[in-house]
Length: 149
Length: 78
Image 1 (cartoon, one colour):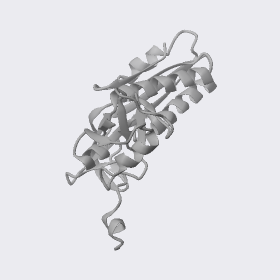
Image 2 (tube, each protein chain N blue to C red; image 1 turned 90 degrees about the vertical axis):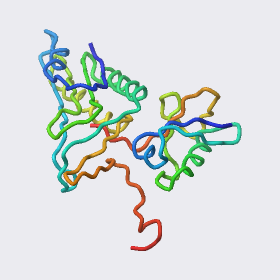
Image 3 (spheres, rainbow over the protein chains, first blue to last red; image 1 turned 30 degrees about the horizontal axis):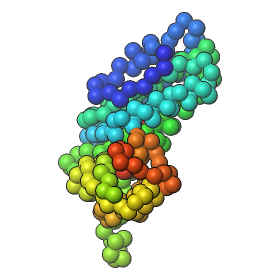
Image 4 (cartoon, chains in turn red, green; image 1 turned 45 degrees about the horizontal axis):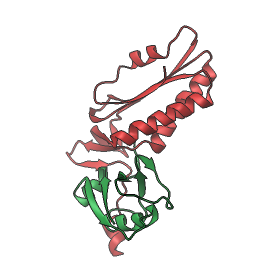
């Protein structure tokens, strides 16, 4: 059965794969996103993920429904973490099962791309110097506001 | 009408709270609310994205009493 989840605990990738591994599904495509140890060349110790929970769940469910509508017969499970994660931890996992590999790959790709575009989840990177920064936030730089460089 | 808006991530940090109230003349459209919300902090864009009742809302959507209104910073899942 297809489903999505916002999880505050470690993601069990094998369990998610098992959920979409019905006997008729000869193909299971997975995508696993993990916390990288650098961001734009700066060393990162971890990432804090937060979400607008109700809307995030609603958007993830909508994305799953769309993937199933696009790739008929596919089963998809997507789980995204919230909370404090360390480098190497799994932040998102998607498993798509289908009789054949084409629709399985397509559904898996569709779900991760749409999650990144639409689901209200935010991440704040923690750097080795102790500072933190919201990813994508792009506040105006002070020199831009004053006209000085 | 006074509208309670929820704020998240960098926007919540910029405003100093996860929730605030903005005043917009009736009838309140999302388009007018975006302008009002933008004035909360120089860190917010001129036209921030708004969600009404947990759905992305276009400028023509009218906000009613009791609607859940949220300002959505650029998302960064994955």
